[in-house]
Length: 208
Figure 1 (cartoon, helix red, strand yellow):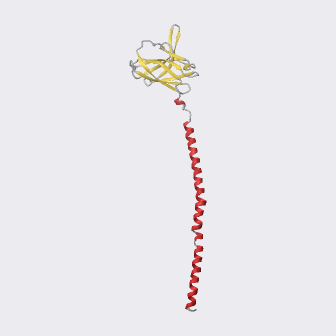
Figure 2: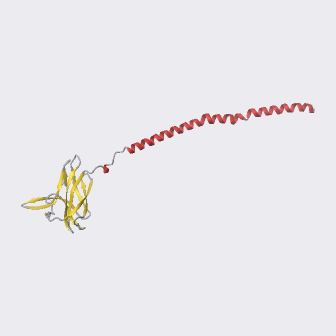
Figure 3: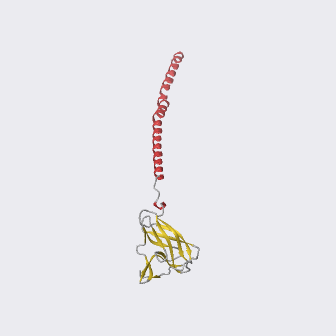
């Protein structure tokens, strides 16, 4: 081949090679990748995430509302009994007694089945009964029953809370804590002021 012929052939071959490269390069990379990612996958992923987030938020709000609207626990309800004029007989040791008026604040009967105080090792619910001209105190069988909306008076010579073993001196003017236990397991607490009192010395019938 002569130099003149080669000069004619080389520019044509080079031009064909460059044209082929320009056609093949974009098809597998830039042209296909950008439209597929932008128009296909990304919108679907964002939309799915938004839907899930909205559902989670709605569930959280509903749960919070339900918790807020929960009923008030029974322990926070008003006490079934109110205690009026409570007092306790002074004593340095031995026995003493507490008195008060128990007022039922509910629409059904309330029964007191037990009582306690930290100043006595043993506390009982007592009644006073007469027999042949004498009076005797004994355990109150069934406890103190206060009718619906009514009251039950604890007083000297009648029903009372008996402290059988005073272990801490009950001095005049001091306030002594008491807790009443009801038949349904609820409790009612109150403070009784200590007073000097010469009565309430009935004999005790331990066999009762």
